[in-house]
Image 1 (cartoon, helix red, strand yellow):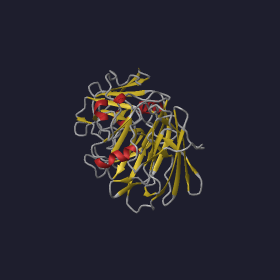
Image 2 (cartoon, helix red, strand yellow):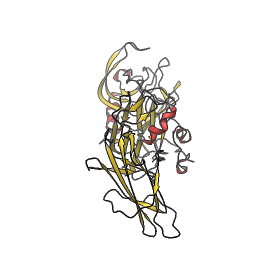
Image 3 (cartoon, one colour):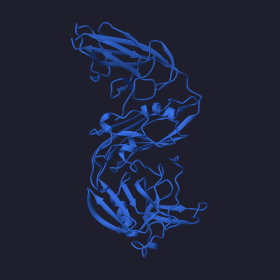
Length: 420
């Protein structure tokens, strides 16, 4: 859920005779009740015969004294374009990028409270394929997966998005949840990543559909968006891990209940583990940590049952070589060492998207080092939106007392396998 704004293109307003349209219909835009039973006034953008529009163009609609009842968009071959309305009814968005140098016709109908109708028809043409360099976007939300309840929708950008371009990019990022749950986008300060999350955790069983509709979108003066990406996945069971450096124990919660405590060995003082709220990003039955050329590194080691927490190379993994230290002494290079048996058990219960909270270590988790959407309060999170946040999504009044309980910026580098 996010606030939308209609396109700021030239508009034409007319009152016309009724036209029956075969296409998308909606009852989303309430209008003032006409006192004299006249047909509603309908405004549609872009204006008729507008040319050289980006392939991300949307059909803007505004109606006075009625509601939109039908929208039909066809290309110059007569093929209908599938469209969906924005939540505020201000525009209709093609479900896939339009084609360059093609002409499209939009027919829109609105019906007033007295039953009279207004129609509007506009024809527009898209621009040639752009030769500008593209911003590379990466959607860290795959389709047909089952994620944990803390899974943020993450989009990363290379190069980062300048502050003045972020509103236009954010308007082209869409999230739908079933059952509906409110949420908001928030940018890292440097514009390298943007996160979408709810005020609280996703409810188990929720279906989340995401679209990053950026292909051909003008981004600033010199670049365009690279691709249009979509994904739909589900939220699975609620699992959360709490790790306390003071006790050297990991507490594992499922559905808000403590189900196991596991001894751990964290990063030694020269290579400490970060404190903060992380999200499991990847799971590997087997992988290799290669730290040659990195500070405090220089080793190559094969590990089993490894779960990534940060871009910088912090993992939870099996470490049979440190089992005598687990629960007593920190000896790792920043990773969370657990026994081989415990690591295998964790792989069977955790999901990508589960929350992992660390406390009491020597350093704090840095913004953008992993999916750090939960490492700030909701109040601070919504301040990172490039668009106004609806009143209903203002800061939550109450936060969960226990991260394990059930409840409703640097660029991302190439992942480092520097754990230990």
